[in-house]
Length: 153
Image (cartoon, rainbow, N blue to C red):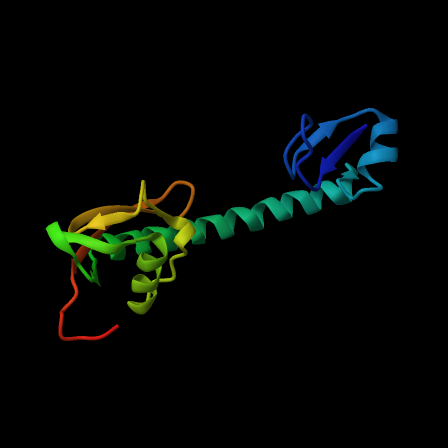
């Protein structure tokens, strides 16, 4: 029996795939749990339409990601921190700090998209990878500078 998977099923297939399964498995497990629908003409047409919609959304997202990548790579972010001996930071610069700095500049970037091998603990210039989508990764230039002694937190 041919069914269209609505959700990914381990060892069977991904969401949106057309798979061939035994009749009992489809009737007793997949269909009652809304994991699949019978592959009739109506459902196949709906699947094709759904695939076209997803494809157009992905193209728009890809185009937007390319624009954001260009903006990020032409932008440099500065974070100022208190510094102790030997230019060591009190604390460190984390993905959350970078996220806050980028949001202040108008970028909608989540800290989960920011790839740091480890928190930054020294002054300097760093290249930070930001994963915008599965295929698009931007490199941000981050300046970590000493906080002015005269200003308060």
